[in-house]
Length: 248
Image 1 (cartoon, helix red, strand yellow):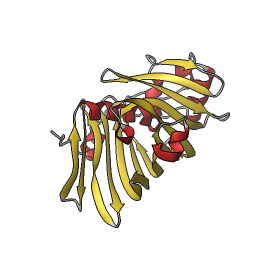
Image 2 (tube, helix red, strand yellow):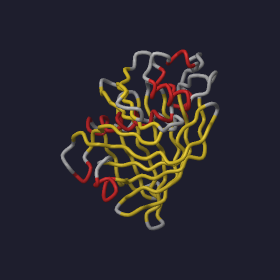
Image 3 (cartoon, rainbow, N blue to C red):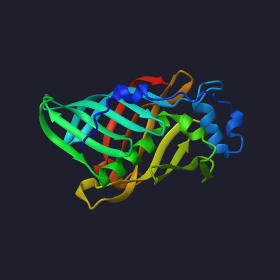
Image 4 (cartoon, one colour):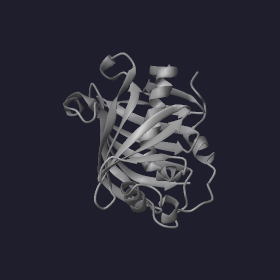
């Protein structure tokens, strides 16, 4: 059954952490991780419990289709992505979500005719992976002292997140200034209609902006098979520009 909680309700449910960022919080992390976090979170910025994004772009649904969307990611509770895409001028609206342990998708043509209503274990596992990857828009997640970090080289660092017993090892590519350039991780799904399983997922963070002390990607493109030739030819399916970011 599709959950009834709204995007606004999820946003308002976030409880501020009551702590602020300082470099001392991450002093024990690998140098690449420190470079990234000191770039993405300003000293004194409150450690947010939720982020709200407004975006627009293109999503690949047989062909590339324009969309507009709003999203909330709430620490330890979940995520809702609510959007409208236009296929040959006709609007399809709905949401992808993972909230309180259940993932679901619901999309309707003209706001009336169901074209997709799905849930279940595979949807939940895929949605958890998506939310973990999109934690880069809520970088306060990475200040958890329980997280384990591994420096792969001077530009790549890996951290392990776990939500609802679904582990996700994120590999972040970090530039010389601390800018996030790429993300990559194994996400559960069935790209190209394959049997559900883990496949490489990730993308390029092309531009960034600063909002309330957080410097996060504002233009990016992502998809399946990241790191292989299949990404450009068939895996990439989402390109977006973010124009508003709010933290709570």
